[in-house]
Image 1 (cartoon, helix red, strand yellow):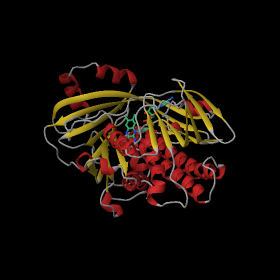
Image 2: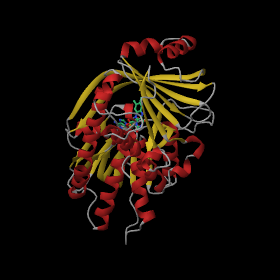
Image 3: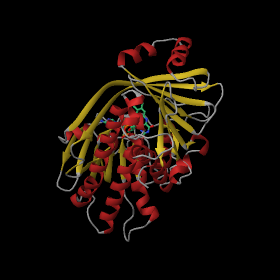
Image 4: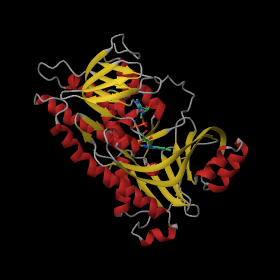
Length: 410
Ligand SMILES: Cc1cc2nc3c(=O)[nH]c(=O)nc-3n(C[C@H](O)[C@H](O)[C@H](O)COP(=O)(O)OP(=O)(O)OC[C@H]3O[C@@H](n4cnc5c(N)ncnc54)[C@H](O)[C@@H]3O)c2cc1C
């Protein structure tokens, strides 16, 4: 059984070391851990994997707790989690299906609508609390004998040897792996340390997340976004009459709303959100996150690959960050699986190059598309129709793009 703490030995060797145990890093470990379980490779006992994370091991959330951060998972992401056994650790109750997206502005809240049935799908995806998903991943990995979860651990130095990467942790322990996967988020130390530059755009915006309990829950399977010049406002429906309101705005304005008491915040929401928002019974919690775009110029280096936010950070208005990260997991996992089948070393540059060739342009295209949507939607809604968005019931190229985002690679 894998342990949450460091073993006593100074030096531990693994096939793969993943630095960063957020959703994407843990999903990578789950995917690699499945290689042997799902399709045994002759004579290969399965990969040994270490996940090093600076944070504490995630804790179980009680049923009535609502975690601050929520993520939408598209069909591609749900498939990956299902296949790798993660959803078995996440009760269905916590996955809120959405099958309709509505987009508009304050005066025309449903200027555009998108139904999953338009593209013959039962749903676009689900909303899930990040912490609940991360806990489910952790529980799954704890059961895997060949996976070691090293919580509250930081890397002090890294050295690339001809046949492996060597990491020295703050506590002096040495961790080695044939391949290092950097999944350590937007401020990736792995990326910086490998000398990989990243291009970025600062939107000068913060996302304020306000979790609420609504007096009633109409349209539980509909998510909507209304655009305002300062940034969009969105509602993500969740279980048990709860919802996450996402309000993008200038950092100073968000800061002042963070300081409001609950009654004043409710009144301010009422003023700015469209009347379709049901009455708010309770403000559960609020938080804020700076918004930026960032793309690493390459994803690989000798015996090293970047995935998730370490490789790309996208404006969250289209709910794509985790989805893109899980697509990285899918493709890198397939490449490493294939390398093993051909008897190649896990640090094999062919596999890594293939991963980069596949994912970099796809992620770049999605980053650009979301950037364009961001710019388009900052114009007054009336202009949008002149730019080819079409009426609410017509499938235009932009609508197709938005639906592709919801569905992801299938
Ligand atoms: C407001 C908001 C809403 C969003 N909504 C959505 C959505 O609806 N759908 C969606 O798909 N995405 C969404 N995103 C984006 C999504 O949250 C991120 O893309 C995703 O969390 C990235 O996951 P990650 O595992 O790559 O990185 P992170 O979640 O940043 O995890 C990185 C991990 O690495 C660890 N770490 C960092 N540095 C080190 C180090 N030096 N050593 C060891 N460990 C380290 C950290 O402790 C952390 O656990 C949203 C983002 C925001 C801000």
